[in-house]
Length: 382
Image 1 (tube, helix red, strand yellow):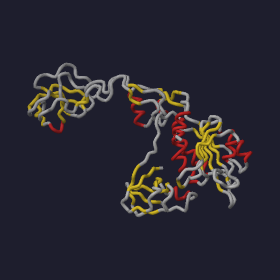
Image 2 (cartoon, rainbow, N blue to C red):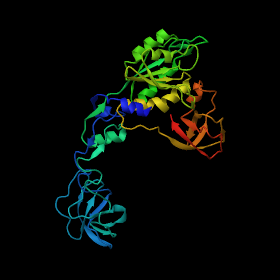
Image 3 (spheres, one colour):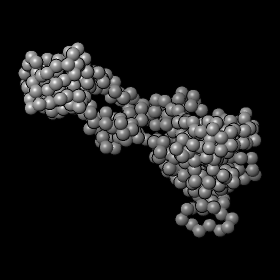
Image 4 (tube, helix red, strand yellow):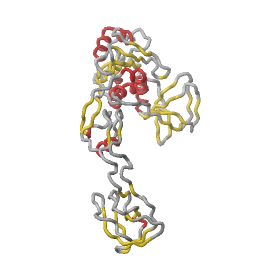
């Protein structure tokens, strides 16, 4: 799936956004240092700038320099300059002695031995002028925003966010604001997918609910294929009224696969029609959300200009024994608390309240039946 999207994608157009709006966007141009980082030798401790020495000494305090200031002149012989964290090193000084390690009497101090370079951040040791600080295709987090600001970038080149059409199917669905009859359910999948799309860097558009007819589903797919990515929910199983695949075929779709060996989420469809990639996600709520995270999210990130994508796996220690029927890799709701993994009791892939009690999915190995408390298991945090 990643291979097909990587080979076929065209990078999105570039736009410029103000620095405060760069968070979670994808950088479209290498960010290079506009000067050395740091721009001069500076102290990393409050204390005294001194020459290096292998033995304790008594020195006189000849001045002071603080962050934002400069000590004019050269460090005198047998003297020290009081210095604050972040302040530039005086000429002739070779080390910094922490204030906690000094005994002071008026303008005279007793200092311990000091090695050359001690508590000094050297010019350019973090980055040299012209060095790449953030590469093209990287998502921008709060640390990235700090680096952009430090490099003087008030406007940031980023890729346009992909537009993602979301099409839920099924005669049993009604809008969220409706009062459903007992045989109906509200369209929660479309809104959950919209939230997942936003988190993955896309711009969601929720389409009208598709009825379980070939004509109506195909007409809404026509609209959805105008987006950068189309996500369909439901209608991809083998039932009499599961018409998503025939409706996609009517638009000349090429299907890369239509089933995966996981639970929930086996009947997953991935393909391309009229130049637009699509995913037909299973309709049960947990199936929809799991398959988006495991498959569609990577495609969306690549279409948004990301240079690399990877699932954010962690491991957690089981707080209790666990068993399942082997055969399929399963993604089950769980809760991770202080590094301990607690499976969440669920009635199946339609159990949304169970997902609300979870903060992770645990990945259960298809080839293993039992785990003991204390065993480790991979998880993805929600």
